[in-house]
Amino acid sequence: MNKGRKPDIVCIGAQKAGTSWLHVTLAARDDVWVPPFKEMHFFDHKFIAECRRWAPWHVKQGLKIARERHLMRTLEPDTTYLEYLDRLQTKPMLNGTWYKYIFSRAAENQKCLDVTPEYSCIPDEGVDFFKRFLPQTKLIYIIRNPLDRLTSQLRMNAHRKKKLPSSPEGWEELLKQPALKTRGDYLNNIPRWSARFSSDQLLYLPFSQIRCDPQSALRKIEQHCDLPPAQYPQAGEKVHRTEPLELPEFVIARLKELAAPQSHFIREHFGDSFYNDT
Image (cartoon, rainbow, N blue to C red; front, side, top):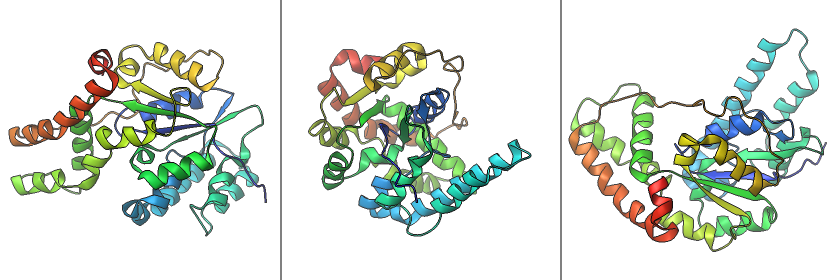
C-alpha cells in the first residue's frame, strides 16, 4: 500500500468564513491537490469527543458522493480511483496512516490541501500534536466578523433541522448548541495557535478581503503558501450561500451578546484596522 504523504497547506477555520470558497478555488489550480471531499476531520476526531460521534459518518458520506460524482462523469470508471475510495472507508479510519493515505494520489509537483474548519477548535494537546505531526505545513485561519459568522451558522443549523424553529423554545435549543460557540471562538482558539505557530507559518486572513477583493486575498494566500501567481476566473463566486431566515429579535440580541467578547478580542489581538476589515 502506498504510504502516502502529509498536507502542505491546511485551512483550520473558521466555520462559515469562506473555507468552502478556499477549497474550491485552490482546487482549480493544477499544482494543488485536494481530497475527493472537503473536511477530513483527522485532528478534531482525535481530540474532540463530540466530533468522534459524527466524523466517521461525514467521511463515509463524502466518499459516497465522490463515488457517485465519478460514475456520473465518465463512461469508463477509473478502477484505481474507486479502489482508493474503498480503502478510505475501510477500518481503521481516521488514524495517522489513513490520513496520510488520503494524499497518496497527489503528484510530486502538487501541494496537498486539507480544509477542515473544526481543526481550529482542538485543545492545547491537539495543537501540540498538530505541530509535531505537521511541523512544516502552512496554515490558514480565516477570521470573519463574529456576529455575521454566528448569524450565518445559526441559520445553517436551523435549516438543517427537519423543521424550522417556530417557538422561543425551538430557538433556545439552537442557541444552546455547543458548536455555535466553539466554531467561532476566536478568543480561546487563536491564542493556542498563535503560541505555537509564527506568522511565517500561520496566516490570519480577514473574511472581508475574500468577499470584497478575492484576487487580493488569493495573492496573499499564494505568497504565504509559496504558490506561483495564477488566474482564478471563478474567484468572485460564492460557493455555499446560507439560505435567508428571519431571526426573532431576542435571538439577534443573544447573538450580539455572544459576539461581543469575540469582537473585542479581534480588535485587541489584531488591531482596529484588521477588525474593521472583517
